[in-house]
Length: 305
Image (cartoon, rainbow, N blue to C red):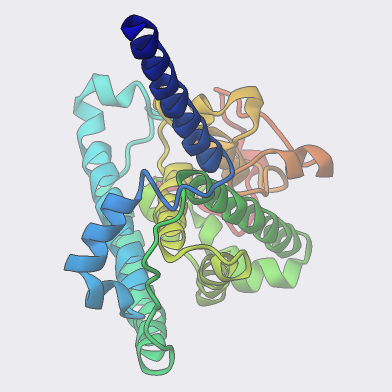
């Protein structure tokens, strides 16, 4: 009798634990885990960097810092590649090294843009935008990644239309976008080798899209970092095994090879990240190892030799 009671008690305990586990699993699948995975990170940031995170300057500082760290790493690779075959083998144009004049020219424009466009915009945000409200709960892991994906899809569509328009209307191309195409074999510093109008457009969408999708501020910052990362990777001039276009299946992600092809054949590959809009619009083209002939180069472009 005592054994039966013990077995019944153990059975009730196991059933209770199983129901509790299934309930927790169900909550997670419905996004109701209240940031179970991200909550410790969010609590740490909330408690130790509260004032920094609330500042309207923080998103700008985060994006700028991410960009210069990534560009610095790629530039080191560019300088080492001519004498390091292990690096040079992954370059899309191994016979066309990035030179110091290339670096100084693009870096000069980047610094100019940050001083005369990004810095004033950051000061304006600091003066007129209220501090960022920090909720006590972190986003669930599902909503974090889904929010970043949603922002990437919306941004990709916006820039596809902008990019297509600025290539199809000659005045827009000459006035605003030809500047970016002065390098037909891009490297990382070409990412922000942009006119002020293009820089404003890109920055505006990157700021507004998370607001439109009502993302958690942690999701917003994650999107900003990832957006800078993939934008820099698109222009880096390398085809590494871990690059996004080699990780995303079915050719859904364009990546550095396709964007390099766009700089060589400017009537193709307008989408910054995904491939579906170029497929639908008939503007998709695959990169070719041999590149292109000089006769395909538009008058507005120059070689980076």
